[in-house]
Amino acid sequence: MSLNSTGKADEEERREDVAAVERQDSREVDEGKGTWKHAAFHVATTIATPAAYAPLPFALASLGWPLGNF
Image (cartoon, rainbow, N blue to C red; front, side):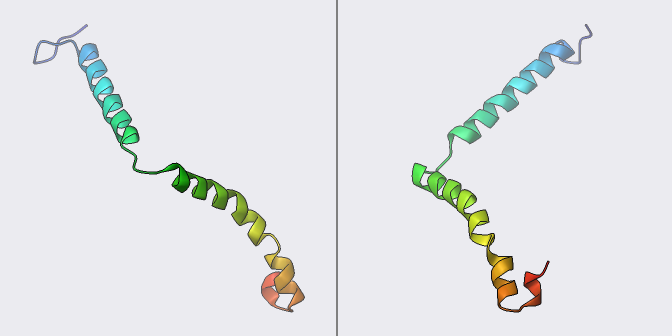
């Protein structure tokens, strides 16, 4: 194992850097300001949006619009 200019082993310094990044990432996740209502809204719209758009091509074709015929 080689030593760098500070006398620490390269592997040890890399482990410390990785640990520092992991601590920073966990703080960013923990500092979320969202509420359960906000999360529920996103889940509901993610589930409902494809179902809302599914009948559009049929509806447009029924109206005679060329966009409905794809």
